[in-house]
Length: 229
Image (cartoon, rainbow, N blue to C red; front, side):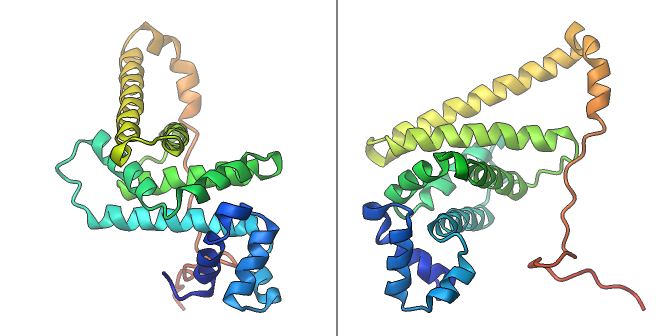
């Protein structure tokens, strides 16, 4: 448990989520439990419980990244490295009911964009942690594909009652196998008649590039680049 006020509020909220969900009642109870000024709490979480749920998800991403950094994945096949990362992300969950309630929260139309950003962020953290260097359209397709895989695995995991979640890990392996088969199909297609047919559109996609991270904007957690006098 972290000593930061943000994490203390998230930890306090987790005690109430199974009963109240990620709701204003949960947020108010967490604020009371931590005994913090409500104005300060709103400053940290302007949208209340929604921002608490977002912070909880991002904390899981951070725990997953730490597990990836601590593990020696060099001897694993690439597909097994991806599977390890997804497993690490699910194993970072402190309370499955919190994720279940979060899934309901982010399924609401007004929160769907936030939910999609969180899933994309998880996929991006995995690819970045695995050393992905793509800067073209593959940067997007890798994250989109993994976002779909991760979303499906989470939904399966929420209903999995097997010992040690073995059914979930088997489901994960099947989904990754499907992705590998699709990647092989794409590679074979590029070498055949379909690849020649799609040569024109493919050249257009060469103009698609990955976003460039910025660390010199207001609100950044990274220091601005130093300039020479």
